[in-house]
Amino acid sequence: MDARLKELISLGASVSAHCFPCFDYHLEIARKLGIGEEEIQESVRAGLRVMDGAGQKMWARIHEIFPGISIKRTEIRSNKQYLKSNRPAPMVRY
Image (cartoon, rainbow, N blue to C red; front, side, top):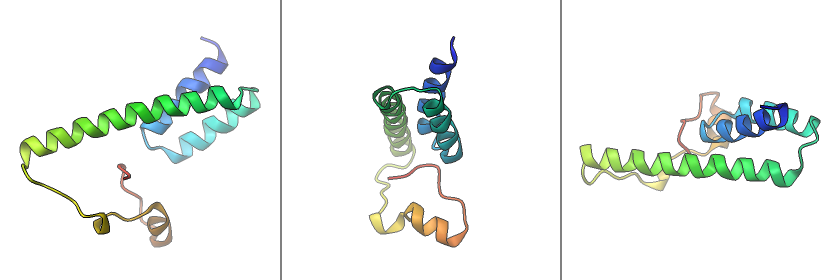
């Protein structure tokens, strides 16, 4: 596997893992390797599809265990709110 492919896979994986430092690092390396924006964006889209699928499966599992559970939009803090509070953001973002 060549370096370009490794970085594209790593970039998509960092998206699906919600790892901001990993994403920033692999994006920088991908650009240094001369990988085009279209290829980078396709890798990001692949990571988003994996993330979305995993999130939907998790919600289905939660609803099996806790039927009727819900969360209000006001209960979810934005990334900016977490950055201001110096607390780590939750892994799942809506």
